[in-house]
Image (cartoon, helix red, strand yellow):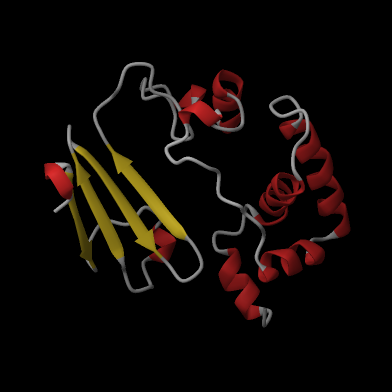
Length: 166
């Protein structure tokens, strides 16, 4: 139980998955039950996490999962960025500082293996996509975007990387 009755945290190997492609792996699920019917589930995998937040609709709710108005057509990344910007403003952060994020060695290697034509397309698309929302995208933002363009249609790039011996 969390201090002051704020909720409780449990760990389980049972539960509905966010991503069906992970069904072959052992489940490690941390559930955080909070006030007002809010539940956060963290699915811990070897090299990443999936996250699901379930909660009642809030006034002016918006974010990477959409705006909860029932219209999936206005929940695209571009639509959310247009409404809110590409990053959470500093005064709205849940924590006091942003995490220092970088690509893993495998992600760096995958980026170098992206087909030259596709890599050029990724550079162009990411520069156009990020520029309207952030006048000076960081190198990691560009590389992350480019990795998505190069391998985004691959359901599990990790599996592909392992098959290449990375």
